[in-house]
Amino acid sequence: MKSSSALVSRRYAHALLDAVGDLKLDAEEIRGTLRTAAHVLAAERDLLRVLEAPQVPPAAKSALISTLCGGAGDTHLVVRLIAVLAQRGRLSLLADVEQAYARLWHLRSGVLSAEAISATPLSRVQIETLQHAVEKASGKRVEITPRVDTRVVGGVMLRIGDRIFDGSIRARLKALRATLEQAVSAY
Image 1 (tube, one colour):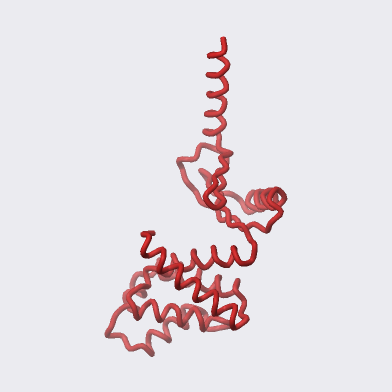
Image 2 (cartoon, rainbow, N blue to C red):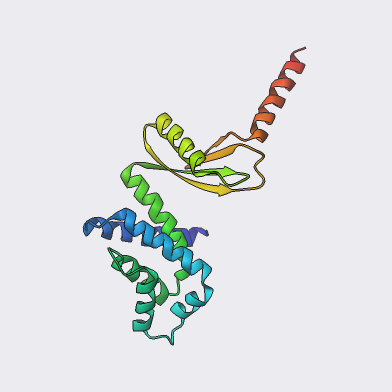
């Protein structure tokens, strides 16, 4: 994400979260709706083009967006946000807005966001075990997002904010190599 688009995405996320707080809506439900809409728009390029097309009437766009968001619960704010992004030609920012919203919501609610990076997909049990361990160590509620990166050689790397905890085999081998080199140089 470019710095200018990151700034714009954060501004939209701040505005959305402030409105959610002012209206006393369910921030987690809004986040889920936002996440679903971002995933659908990322997968459905034709829908994205229709929503950004100036020749499509605003009422038709609103109907599509309402359908996209499920039309139930507190989705009206997300519908309005997507309509504004479409009107301004910024729908490509929706995924970034969703991520910024999640980070802001976590900050305000005291939840740590963590990313678990592994070579293969982690099972639900592995994620829950990792989450429990981080919660116990930090004393805070933790939400872990798994990500697969085939460059990781066994084990898991955990990113919390700008800190990385490397539990991969590559990191262990590197530490072992450093220990052996230190031992050899001592003799």
